[in-house]
Amino acid sequence: MKTKFDELLDFPTVLNFKVMGVACDELPDLIIAELQKHTPGDYSPTIKPSSKGNYHSVSIAVTVTSKEHIEKIYKTLTAIEQVRYVL
Image 1 (cartoon, rainbow, N blue to C red):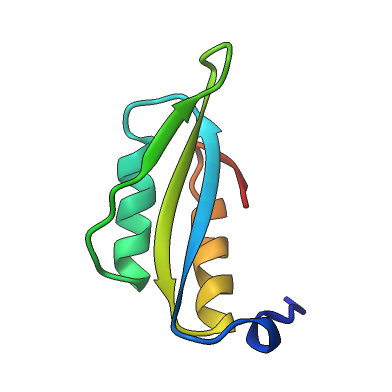
Image 2: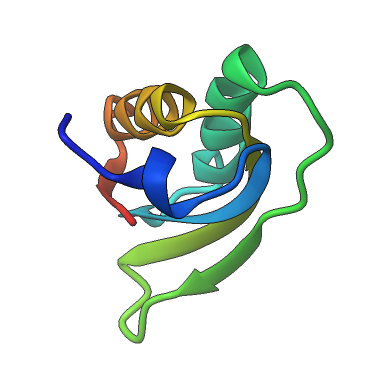
């Protein structure tokens, strides 16, 4: 990816990732399991259901150490089958 994260941020820093996916009970656990592979830690996600209840928005704060780290997390989260978008 061609991004300017390394120019705009001082690392390490905390970024909030918003993951939107299909409304299922295991979605937060799947997200945390993937994050633990790259950035072990204690996470407490915030979950908001959509107005019709078909989707959940999971917000989670992650300490990132580099531009490559951000990109790796993004790619890992988008690979989860239930996930539709990562912001």
